[in-house]
Structure formats: structure tokens, C-alpha cells
Length: 312
Image 1 (cartoon, rainbow, N blue to C red):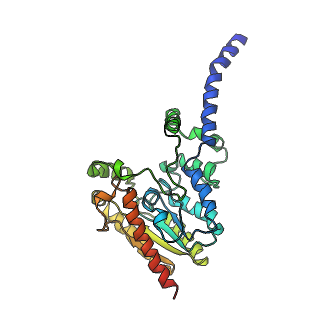
Image 2 (tube, one colour):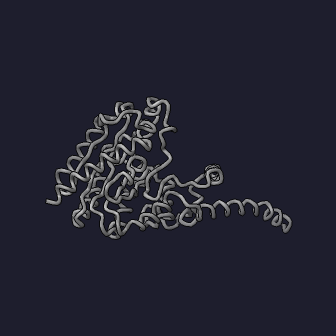
Image 3 (cartoon, rainbow, N blue to C red):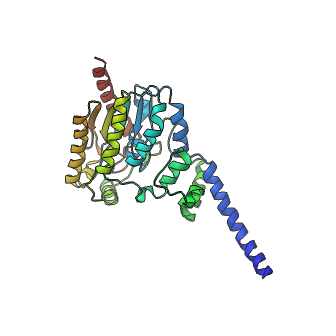
């Protein structure tokens, strides 16, 4: 029996060491979430524009293209649920923010909390962005072991990338995603659009959960004198042609209703804006770095127009 225990220990010991090393990597290696959390606090004193949303604004709105100091707090697959948690945590610390840019597009109003997109991301928000995340149960083991949110092969792939590229961070100090560049863009936009739409379509048109979250954000902004710019980001024609038109129109109508019923809300719909062509996109629904420059200037001009009007 003693020999069996000893052999079992010798067998398990290197496995435990490997798992411990992976966990340490997750605890100390900077990533998009840690970088955003640190730089968000660094912008408390001077930022005048704050951007929230998912990957479309993460890759599509570059703060350096804005006249006012801007910070991009959006992230890949960031749901409205986490937009609100981040907003509630940080907004009172921003001393000069006068504009909140909120991305509302084809997936954001129907994306429910704690679904597949949040399967591992919810732990990242807790571990790396110091958020209280109510959808995480207190006895969940991933409260303590963030490496457990991914498969062993995914963990090894991430570590391999870190040693190859010397980083796993894909955003700059302004929160803008830097790895969707023009020279890496997808070759076949039509094929990309078909795959992306299939992945995005949830067939949900009940937006109550997310509209309630948005209304809460708007109301707090109203009380703080912050203008809310709702933006529907541009997509390729290939993507726009394949979406559920009934759902899309309901999204547009919801955004317009928020504008109509709130004096501090302005809606900018760029979804099928003719100023964009497929050449501006990294893939079917994301702008590349040069397309983002164009889009950012449009949103900046829109903000400047609203800023000029509110001064009188």
C-alpha cells in the first residue's frame, strides 16, 4: 500500500507542477483585461469620452482619432451585461467624461448574460478587472483557478503564443485593438460573412434584458450631465445582406426610441453607410486599422456636432 501511494505521488507530482505553472502564468501575464483595467484608472482625471461595447468598437474606434481625450473600454464579445458592470464600477471615478459611446449592433441587444460567450470571459472580468460578477456562483472553483476556464490544449496554445510573440496583449494603452490590420484581412468576405452570421444568429428578438441595462446607463449619464452616443457600427455588404431584416429593423427602432425618449441620447447608424466599402474591413463585420481610422473620425465629428449644440 505504501509503495502504491509513493508511485501515485511520483506520477501526479509532475502533473501538479505543470498545472501550477499554467496557473501562475495566468496570474502574472498581462492580457487585454489587465491592460484595460490599469489604463482605465490612468484616464480617470482627463478622459472626456468613454467607449463601451464589443469587438466592433474594440477594433473600430481608435481613441487617437478623437479630438477629446478618449478611452476605449470595449472588448471582444463584451455583452451589455458587462458594459453595465464596467460602467457602474468606473463612471463615478471619471472626472471629465462628457460623452459615453455605446455600441448597439446586430448581436448586442439579443445577447443574454451567462450564455456561451460568457463561459470563460466572466472569470476574466472578475480576476483581471476587479469586477463583482453576480452570475458567478461563490463555490465555483474558477473563482480561484482562472486556468481552469480553458482546456489544457488551449492553455498550452496561449502560453506558446506568449513565448513566440513575447505578449498576449492585443490592445494599446488607449484600449484599441491593434491586431486587425489591413494586410491580414480576410480574402473571401462572402465566405466570411456566411460563417459569421451563422455564429451570430440567436433568433432572439426580446431585447428587454439589455434595453433595461441601457436605460439604467442612460439615466445615470443624464444625472451626471453625460451625453450618450449610441453607435451601430458598419459591416460589409456581404454581412448586411444576410442578417434577419426583421430583427435588424427592431434593433434600429429600439435605438431610435432610446434617442426619442431621452434628451441626452443621440443615435448614429453606420450599419450600411455608403462611405464604407469592403476594402475598409478586416473580415465580414470588423474594420481593420485603416477602416477604424475612418470610422473613428466620423464618430468624432458626430460628437463634436453634439458638443457644439449643447454649449448654447
